[in-house]
Length: 458
Image (cartoon, rainbow, N blue to C red; front, side):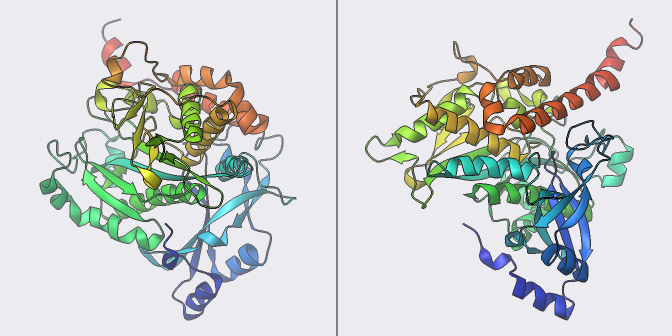
């Protein structure tokens, strides 16, 4: 599913650099929030450090900060180790041009320890590589697709910041889900996404207006696991860049407004053999194969335990309202959107859709959680889940996902499968990072709700 023509091999890169068509290389790696962080290099520096050298030095603190860039006291980076350097080593298979920056190329880097050839264990890309390798050892591979939603406001970013993101003028004035009139009105901008992302190595399937005011949905074509996670973060990076240039403000928050729908990121996953044969579908049964049934069963079994990796922020849990199509009911449905897990497609396209994550998800963490939970189901030979028929939101005995970051943290902390699959260092890192986010909200924030409720009345 990869369009190789959008990527650059080193010979193509050198030809473009020699003519001056490219004069900058963005060397970036995904951080714990799914953002690209790194450095912009000159061509000589990229050659000497990224291609011939040992990598680009960066502080390990990029994996141990909160969203405000405040350093956290985590084992990977703290005052005691001096926020020591790590190395960003380009994965040259990801080198590509940036369509909206004609003179720039971008390459995704893996993070390595400063003094060894060992990848940094807690880097998101390393975490996902570890789960991919665990699957490969069992002769398995997976293909993923992210289906992302986001909101666009017709308020320029600087003005939106000064307004505290309150009372923004959204791109649409009324509900327009699937409406082609609104799609036509929005296409002056959305077509830039559809048409420029493929040139950025991010293949697009479709776009449409969503239910929320100013909300859009763009579906990415499926591909192998690591590449899909890379495309996911590149897509968000690109949309933010394009929106800023168009004087639009974009958010991938899970729930920007409590009185409007949230933004999802439905994750589609199918199972394949290491040699490329599809394994999800059984011609004999006309449905799930036995192994894929166990894989799906593992996801349902651990959905609550692993929600922390699917819903990473305090805001994520505001989206979990049963009447707004969020994946709150932990059940498996056949093309049933009231279920957190939904079977779609037939034959090689047969897959399960996880409807729990929001637009704020880090794909490296979410894909890792999916694989780890599924492999546990296979190891335990769990039977395929029953297919739920009807409204799962009101179904008797249907469990629901955690409804707060507090609850998700507690369940994750108690999950022995997650600790075993991820390893102690990664597990403790993820747990500590999430605790810091929760403390920041619980102890350092006064919300608008509190002001309205208590200011004059207590």
